[in-house]
Image 1 (cartoon, rainbow, N blue to C red):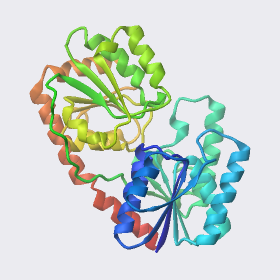
Image 2 (tube, rainbow, N blue to C red):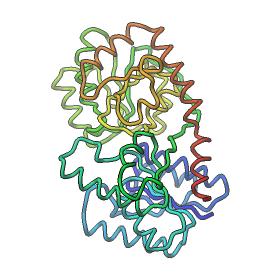
Image 3 (cartoon, rainbow, N blue to C red):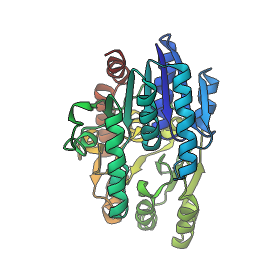
Image 4 (cartoon, rainbow, N blue to C red):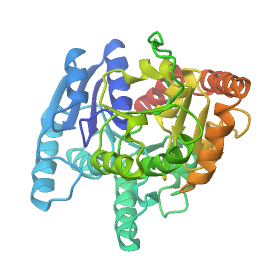
Length: 359
């Protein structure tokens, strides 16, 4: 088959990792694979390294611009009409909307949309949420099938008109990866989330401000994002910058999870986060917020600790609890690893996705 993947941005967050993993696996299976991606970035670099063809759409970006959207849509439509893919698998909201409409107009046989989380669940003004819901509904209508990466993601929209039969849940899957040898014995708490407000890293810094007054430790924050400067300023203003390390984007950052004693994910909204699956597969104890698909991964008290959103006190208390109980850390990490190996395998995700391609 000729299979095209589409995505709005070319950084290397969860959605981009999903596209990369599926595209490389699809190529290994002998199919003709092309990725349409907005701009240049780590995704394009990684795909090029794997000798997968990439068509860059330089005007496609997250911010809204009518002229740029029209230009991007015209380019996508032209590519689809010329290439005639058997499957067009679109990801992220903007590529979903533009790509879904272009796919319909070009007569693409199979349009699959994967939602990696609904933007209307993020903290936004009500009028923005209404507009986003309208475009999300249209995107689902344009697609032949919409993959929801968690049950919660499906429940958020299943009551909308004309779309219930288009929805299917296929959890993100992950395969084993190598961990780097640990080189630092400092007690280390960390996260690999993108630095965006929705990830709740400001809440983590508030909790950390109290934690380091009681324990000598280091907070490692991997990845980049628009909130980096604000978070660095916050750490400075709180007087904790000497215990907080902003590592920036690191290729294959998950290999560094071996250097963590605790993994934190204080997000305000999530769907089925790869970062959490990676932390679990690395055997780490996890503290995460009780949002989106996270409770489908973690059973609080059994395979991790779930806390409310916006609650730095609960995060602080959980950090104290885990830091003072090595046996609890070990037990939670082992249980989460076993759960992910059993329920969130990469092979299962690929098999279920290809069943959609072939129908």
